Image (spheres, rainbow, N blue to C red):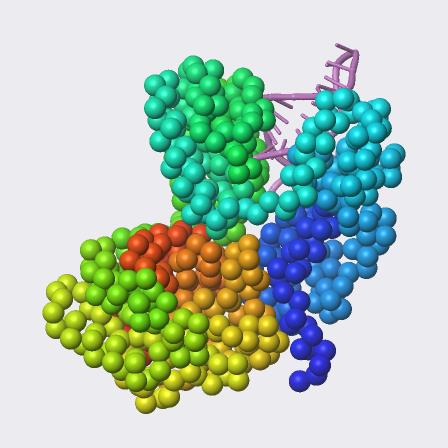
Length: 581
DNA sequence: GCCGTTTTCGGCCCGACTGTTTTCAGTCG
């Protein structure tokens, strides 16, 4: 293979998408045509959501990136340039005109591209520090379009922009949402209440919470939100819309609408934006108009009370919120083939958990009891192998001892099968952490990379392929190793991993830990496209961690997975057949 | 910059709120 071809695969879809997003930011700053900006953001989303790498598509003489909706001749060429050279002249030119540091200004609330450009061009402000100084000197309020109030707002917003606010894990947002709903439900003026936004779509991280209320006494509802514990400030409060910030910086948006608009508003505020834009276009084609108040023909409202009604007005099925990303959902709907997404109750077994034998907090017996209580029909005990010394990982002797205990336990407990498993480390040199004869005795071997995560792409990929090809392994745990907000995924050719997994009938895990959720949604869809079954595991380190399965379910649903696509919706004998054991 | 059975130009989703305006631009979702 020629070196140039190796290079071709080193630019990931995510990197291409990030480049397009940066171009969009810079173009916006320059006041470019908004639709041109949208085209780049759209292109970013399309590339990011691909179930195979753009490089693979380019390398295939029978295919062309322009076949993708939203990628035209120009963007296709830019992708090709990025893949070929790793860079893009257009971005270089943009950055010569607008320094990258200026984009930090856009993170200040209420400071958009127009005002940021005025600050840059008229006051030559390039950094947050320079902006603070200009505000304190009273220079900003003298600019056209600015005033004393906006100068104060900018000063207030600079610290917020400086601390790169992480999005919350969905699980954290879920806790706040539960508290908020409990609080709001004590307001007697509220007839209906629903959470919307990316929280409702089950995104792995959430930036703010959107609360939608059907009520007639708007002021009472807004007062009630203002009284929610932890509200630090009211950001806006109008006739129908209110936004507050909590102590920890998290924002809550409230909208109050009448009952006849509740479904339309729920649809509108659930998004995603990309999904809604397509929807509006479809309405327009039919001479209709959609907004948060309903679907209208002329001035007549023809739908709005429920979401089902809104979608039906466009001859569309109701879409599960997790699918509303303008990925495949409209194509599926057109063919009448919306997938029946997996549900928590479909799960029969959990095949990744730890005990006090390594770094778990509960004993084998306690984990089994907790799993049984949750209605699981089988579980695999997968403590760490010996390489993970920090977790007191198991050598062959201790592992066999644990397996004897499992054999005894299986004689005693009813209604659940406990499998003899191991979370087996793939060592830095690619060898597996336990000898073959031990692995041959296991029911379930899930392989992980914990060490040597910074190795180059070829090495990491080779290690994973080795584990997949080994006859006694079952699955790869958290296949990219990413920790949301904390650690980047390791550099791995996931497509090669998926091809190998399909060939050798091995499973890829979707780890349900809310910090991992790895595979992510796009990778789940890719696994399905490659004919690989996904296995959901909680990676529980305590009994109550078994409840984390629902986070994994959300991610699987976002990936469009059905009950059939997820291996552990089957009985254990069926699953064994699936992996050819 | 994308797109196309009203096609190769002229469209491109829609509305709330605020501050600086004196009828609206900018920001946000």
